[in-house]
Image (cartoon, rainbow, N blue to C red):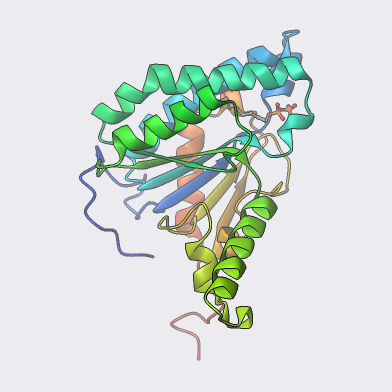
Amino acid sequence: MTSRPETGSSVTGPAPGGAAAPRHVAIIMDGNGRWAQARGLPRTEGHRHGLEALRKIIRHASSRGVDFITLYSFSSENWRRPPTEVSFLMSLLRRFVQRDLSELHKANCRVRIIGEREGLDPGIRSLLEESERVTAANTGMTVVIAFNYGSRDEITRAVRKLTQRYLAEGRDPSAITDAEISANLDTAGIPDPDLIIRTSGELRLSNFLMWQAAYAEFYFTPVLWPDFGPEEFDAALASFCERERRFGGVTATGS
Ligand code: FPP
């Protein structure tokens, strides 16, 4: 288990059972569309309820002592969805920042945004930048919103940036290290996720934190995202606490 720095967050206690909570939980919030369809509602209603679930989970994760929570809100592939759904998701992001930023700030949470910002609507981009700027000095839980995010795109941008820097400095790019790649990803300064949760029964990573997930534990649940509440989150934490993490090594008691 990683040692946990003092964060001054609104942490109220450890995960059920007294075991230490994972420091960084990342979530693929899947199943909004199916949740809506099962109720005869438009898909956008699923996303609206998904935003409610996201709010509850942010509060709950902070109360469980999580230091970083990353939420996959819009992938670089989600542009392929019908334009009405894309624009609804953009409006939800706006609503989230406009309505929830002050609450997050009051709760001492820091906001970080990962994903490609080039090409985003300038209004959305400045809201994202404002949310990072306003909360930059906070010391509580960091809420990482993955928006217009895709791992392949993130890694490609990092490698391009590093190679250009090396060449400009007359250095051989074959000396690039994995630590330098990590430090040039959008997640620079954020510890790798300990636990990745995916809802809705799908068993894949879908271009999410592929570099950072090297030693993450996975938790898959059939529950659709709008129905994923604090009890479900606690079940994921409890499952994490039962895992043995070896990071490529052997158990301490092994001969
Ligand atoms: C996947 O469900 C979910 C998304 C692509 C969007 C996630 C967005 C939210 C939870 C709302 C909060 C949003 C922001 C921007 C803060 P799906 O639509 O793929 O569900 P399906 O697989 O059942 O169709």
